[in-house]
Image 1 (cartoon, rainbow, N blue to C red):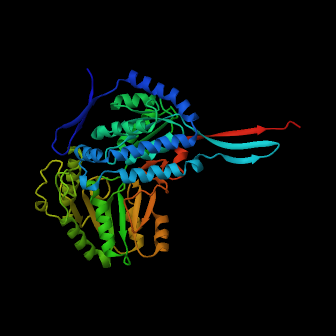
Image 2: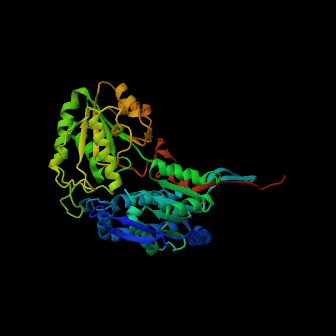
Length: 462
């Protein structure tokens, strides 16, 4: 019997799209075709590969109205946010612009006697397992540099955003990337694990949960297949006494609630110095009260449903447990009558929270944030580091030296000052602890999708 992969829309709880899962043998054959086809692709001049990939991204932009509506149906993001194309183009264009530098050989010697250099060779077949929360942005981080570097790419997208892989394939093929070089496959979990375990890939990039990351590692065990893993976060913000209070509230609360809190680097806990704590909390509550929860297809909606009932249940359970343990909710759910106990989930601010509560330690991935008062930088750093995750940290101060000093003490992949929830394509996107391993974007992003090959050429025998 054929296994069907289904996207259940959080908008109405109905099946929005479904596709048959590809059997192992067919997937293996498709990957074999990609491995053969990538030789001709890699032989193209760099400028030609870059041109075709960027044209494909331009075509994706031409689909943006359709893509934005599909995202609303598939994972609940309000159409007023306009999809993801702005960030997709920014990242793609930047990675294309630094490709020559990122792929250039390292020349150690070029003399009459010797030629010694390190070349950066495409790995071969790159496997991208993409998540649903930012289905285009996260996938592009690896797809674009991998293709430009001369790899073939196999994409497996999350079932919640089933159509995103199809749109990426449609766009890139339209730009001139051969269909055999970039393939979007519909795969179930068992087939995915078997393909990894049988060494079908030369690099695997996965974005998702810690539990799923462990599954990927187990599947790859003994194959020596390199992995890039981004597995989650519990990203903190710290508001110091010299911060611009209004800017801090607006940015941190948007970082906590944008995309219904379903952001890899969204703000999930906020620490505020004693002198600003009360006004920060007051302004944060006012910010939430100004939001509109509702159907993501309504242009007035600012917070849509979370992607699934599973996500909603996790967030509600964390909130309810925290309240039982003494946390105080500041948002009356009655202000958001659309909260139906299902995927439409009222935003919440919790105070009187502690790190004994899961809502301050485990990833929530929903529209809830805890706010704690702190009395010193030392206390704030200790609390920010009291987490199994390390993706980003947001520091609010007018003193860049202080921010840099504290940033060096924080166990995280990215330190922000006076901003949050943003990926700068010129900087390395990475994490530590249970957030995972590896790097994407920046010049280092090309290192993940290539391997070094050394050439030691002795020209003279005398």
